[in-house]
Length: 87
Image (cartoon, rainbow, N blue to C red; front, side, top):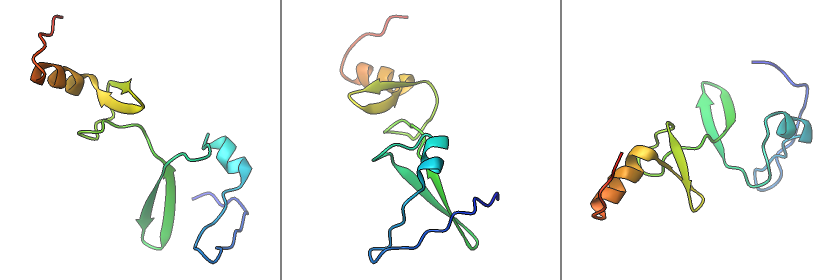
């Protein structure tokens, strides 16, 4: 791990503030979801990657009303709804 030299204190609700420099370099915007991992004695934050809302797949995604769906699942949903898919 690479140290940043930045130290932050937890507030009374257990929150910390990520420095603007880190948010900019990792392209983290206000209200972006972050995943939390634990590795031995380390807490790791990672910006969530888009994934299919049904399977978690991260391949061949399309956006549907703010949600990510893989093309394969969109095709399956259309077929379940009775639509014929033409290639």
